[in-house]
Amino acid sequence: MKTRIMKAVLPWLSLPEDNPRSKFTPITDISRVEDIPEQVVTGLEEVTDSFSFKANEYYLDLINWDDPDDPIRRLIVPNPAEMDGWGEYDASDEASNTRIQGLQHKYPETALFLVTDNCTGFCRYCFRKRLFLAQADEVTRDYSAVYSYITAHPEINDVILSGGDPLSMSTRRLGGILKNLAAIPHVKTVRIGSKTPAYNPMRLGGDTELQRILSDFTAHSGKTLYLIAHFDHPRELTDIALEELAMYRDCGLVVLNQCPILRGINDDAATLSELYNKLHAAGVAPYYAFQGRPVRGNEQYLVPITEAYKIFHDAVKDLTGLAKRARYVMSHSSGKIEILGVDEKHIYMRYHRAKNPKNRERFMIFDRDDSAFWL
Image: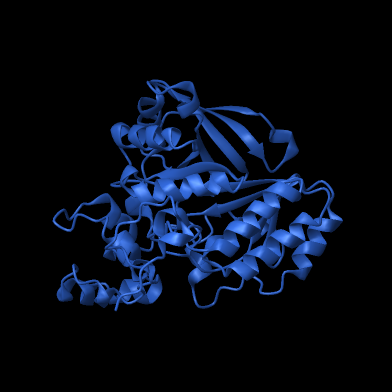
């Protein structure tokens, strides 16, 4: 007998009767994906040996398997092009911002806390795929030194929980992190960066203890808790995903969304505009549209800056003001750089956040290069 998600847990969630809990069980062996021919699976073994595969039945069901260029397929299914030697594992030089194992401190007010090297699903274009390599050691299992560092730096008022995906952790462990951060007076905001709402939109809905922990934090900690969701394509915003996002909001979280502009996934204005409109209708504000980072194996996903700018500009130009709040930015080693405009001769940029204080709000003009992906 199949185990089904109990309706009593979520009396308002219209979960299809044929959507058992096993739909969200991780699949890490690509040969178990029946829609991928055996000969194709054999050709992907080298890829998955280097960059692991992880998905679930729910997410794979979003794919139109009759379309070899399906955007969801491109997002989650390995591709031999990932083995190209182009790019760097740490394209934004995060190593230079690492103060202790598991914590980066690039900007004075913000600490980036790598809480896990696990994810609910493995995006093929991941910019931190280095964390999932066998020799990786950037994530710590003992968080005490991280709490001590944040406590000793009163300028830190904003902590980003990242990884990996914090919502792939056990509820107990995530709850412990929130409890410890709640006890640090100068921390005013905590962000949970996660694609789990896209990969498993029952993570919160199926866990009453997580609901309690999040609601308690937002109601009693005196701090603001953000969910920075990661939806790349409007097809990911299924009814159950939209209901899950509403539940995070009901628990008191402010919900935003960020995503990169990716070749073959959302690299046209109509798709990006639809994504932003659906997010806005769900009460989720678009936050950042990222220029893809030149990470090892990711060249196939990158869109040149001038092309990506036009896609972004065309996508937002007709949106309501609340829906067009996203900024098109590059997470460069020197800071977060906003791409402001492009004309026939130049590309215009400004530091939105700068690692070097001398660069704060600095305006920059570059000669136009339609083949450039990065600075």
